[in-house]
Image (tube, rainbow, N blue to C red; front, side, top):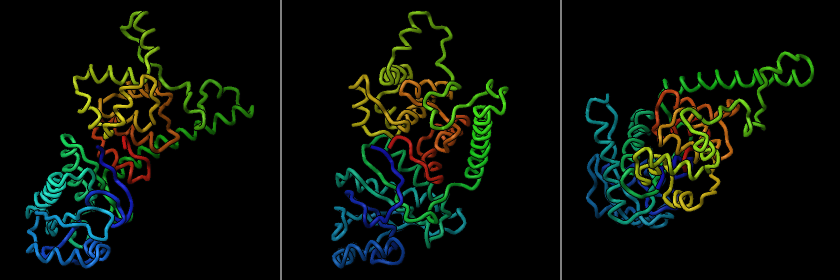
Length: 341
């Protein structure tokens, strides 16, 4: 099952378990810890008193009481000093131990806050990277729906360098697309016939963009070219998975796609996916831009520089970063839909 980043109050998430960024006493505190104890009621603190506290990097589990979840998994994150006192190792352990307890208690869904990123001072971008690295690694071999729950924008942050690079790329492509679109509008108004040679379709016509490259036909016989033209999205996807040497499970997990959704695609030759689903598989299969456009075309889509979502995904493909979870970090930062989920 996939990893989802959502903006919400973790005490209101309906799932099997939520994770509490607790202090070592487990008796409540400020921030997420205090909010969870308040929402759960007195039964939670009474049970926590029987646990004898918890060490940094470890986790313990209790009932959910008045919360809309079966369990609360309490973990104690490290306080940030300078990054040279095993902070990362301890934070990784928080996520691993929490996921272990969730699995041992047959949880199918679990929600995490960004542990240690509040009053404990762990840099938000680094805390996010630790969370993504550990959770995504876990999900490559396990089936569980995992949420990273962000209460507000101030509590979530990708690296400044990545943010700046993506912003610059968006500005370049987005401005270029709209500059060309405005020129085309002038052409349609009859102000410049010359511009007809460089026509760019407006955003609403992007699904039939004549500038979108056609599928590559090099080294194809006539029969092969005709067969490729008749191939549906589902057929092309399954063929490319086979050619990649991946198993189905490896592919849909790398795409952050739910097993049930993949089963629908496999069993329906005419399945119509969302654009986010198509791009998620393109990322999982490490397609270049030409291959990505070809897969999109099979589903009736195209990449457009009129949309930030498309530009951000294109940016990661161009730099050959095919980690769907890192791409989703950036998409969430820019208030875009996520891949796969």
